[in-house]
Amino acid sequence: MSTQSTTPKSVIIVGGSLAGLMHALIFLSLPSPPKVRILERSPTALLHDQGAGVVAGNETQEFFAKYVRPGRDIAVTSPMRHYLNRMGDVMPETVKHQAQRMTSWDLLYHLLRWRIEGRESGHTQGLEADDRPKAQYDNGCTVTGVAEDPDGIRLTWTQDGEHSAIADLVIAADGASSTIRRLVAPAVERNSQSSFMDAKVLLVGDALAGFRPHTAASTGQAAFDALTLGQWMTGENTKEKYDEKVLEFAQRLQHHGVVLGERSQFGRHPFNG
Ligand SMILES: Cc1cc2nc3c(=O)[nH]c(=O)nc-3n(C[C@H](O)[C@H](O)[C@H](O)COP(=O)(O)OP(=O)(O)OC[C@H]3O[C@@H](n4cnc5c(N)ncnc54)[C@H](O)[C@@H]3O)c2cc1C
Image 1: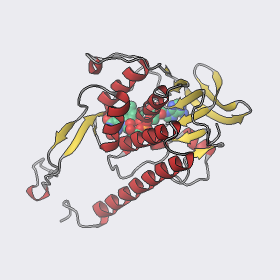
Image 2: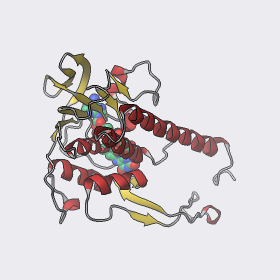
Image 3: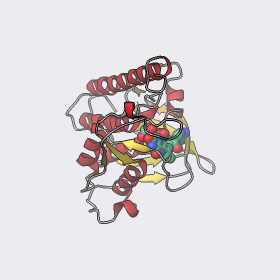
Image 4: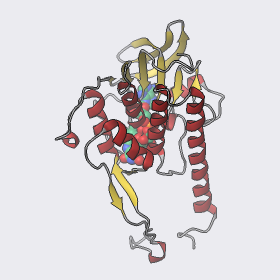
């Protein structure tokens, strides 16, 4: 796919968690949608949350309103933040009245699986389907190789044996320890490059940048990357602008994580007075 053409005919997405699903939905929402296939390593049909809530930041809310269209609120408002001491009591001096929208990983995940595959669950009752095409979601596929091919990008994976397929575009949404990133960019510093192999392989979400300590922004990054891809695919932005925006977001959030870490480890913090 050249940097100018906007719509690939076939897309394979590596990783079927939030970033992979959000990117799948971007393609399925295009006027001439490509064939979309998702390869997910987990052998079970459904992934489960890690028991942590998710901050529903602006990007996440915008993505769900624009692309998932659940027809209802996906978040609740948490009116304040505070710290607990070792006894589990609220430390009054740490109470900060700052509203924040919160949601759950499970809700986002099930809404996305419903939109891209029509998979129903307790989270999707009463929601209205639309006529966007569906993606193929394959579990138990561990991607092990990526290479340029005269017809596009060839991916290889294991699933009771070795398999391969070619796509015009590969989206690497395989998380913080991304295999694709290791294969295409072993020497490239994280956050510094988002597209490879003549813009036919894109790193997105945690595969592009992970924030440590946890800044509660990873889902927001997945949504931001997907929204920005949508702008490129619809011609609203150029490929160059896409790269610039996703890298700027990743670097800004990564810096924020470092500042938080410095403060909590070495600076003045509610825990250490
Ligand atoms: C099962 C699960 C539950 C989570 N629960 C929470 C939560 O409750 N709260 C929270 O804040 N965050 C949670 N997260 C993390 C959160 O999803 C991410 O930090 C963020 O949303 C960015 O998502 P991502 O899709 O980029 O990465 P991830 O969510 O890490 O997804 C990466 C996906 O790629 C797959 N994968 C990795 N390598 C390969 C490979 N070689 N071939 C094929 N597939 C591969 C993984 O199995 C995984 O499904 C969870 C992640 C997972 C995978």
